[in-house]
Image (cartoon, rainbow, N blue to C red; front, side):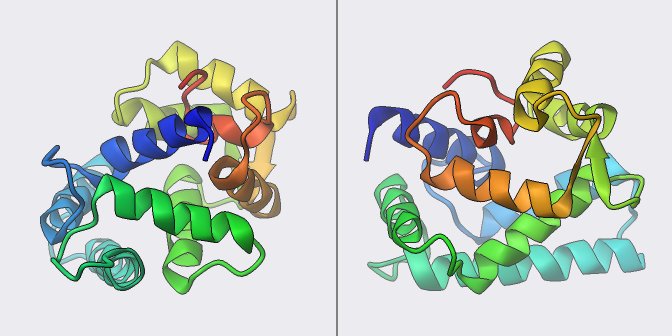
Length: 182
């Protein structure tokens, strides 16, 4: 795996999965992620949106753990993370259920209006909550969508796959998480 690909995979590992910054991904990270997402959207504990987010992220964690936790220690290390995505790159047209569920989760999180497409403001709103400067998010969005005003689910899915398999830093999928450089 090229250094560029490792850097962007490590970025996703650190920012979106290892929420408590422990150096591994575990169930606690997903509990924190549930809280972060629900606060971002203003969903209170006990609401249908909160429960749906909780159930979805716990299912994603279960799928991730079952696939990537090769030593069965209840955690996913960086090395296990890299291996799992390297396996994905060999057959990107056959994602694991949890990978597809996470793709849909992220699309729906970014499509805050629910209109079936992500625009620059929606994209910036989510990515900036994860520590990316808003101006960098806007640049990343333009690179990602090639000047189009929005990204549909089908486009997002192609960009998503490209992010996880591409070794070429200029591919538009590399900007899907709001960063312009890794």
